[in-house]
Length: 103
Image (tube, rainbow, N blue to C red):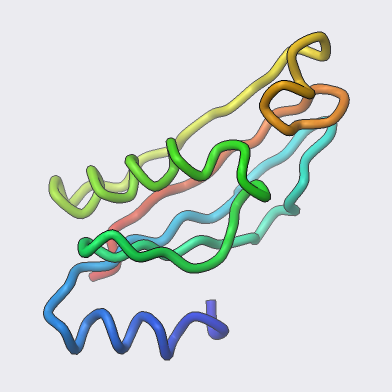
């Protein structure tokens, strides 16, 4: 997460809240590895990636919700082989992403 510290500091200095999403488990094909991070501000900015684009929208929304509620949550995304290419996960796959508000 150190690569995002300057961005996080900027958001916090503006009085915004921040959430962090981290890939915690993958199975099958996955564009990002365990440990990949995305940070999101309550103002709608984001940095980083947890999937190369195929689930970022859903993760962004979960980050906004985590900041509003002050609660972490585990997200699970799984795709069958036949529909994998449509959402950007080659050969199917599964990604678990942990979303938490930064406190």
